[in-house]
Length: 52
Image (cartoon, rainbow, N blue to C red):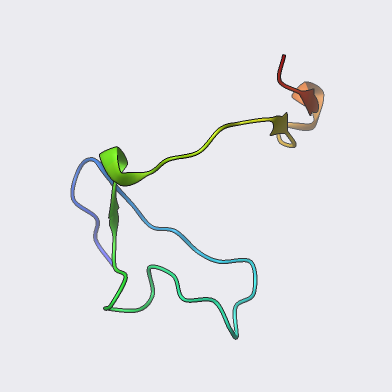
């Protein structure tokens, strides 16, 4: 899949059951449509920890 600038490929954590960007009904997600809050950094491991 080739993504246009400003779009992301999102993959679920359960390959067999997740509905993610691999499905045409979902597809690539525009950056502006992504909502969330970072609370933990897990990688790179040197930065592992909670966000304050």
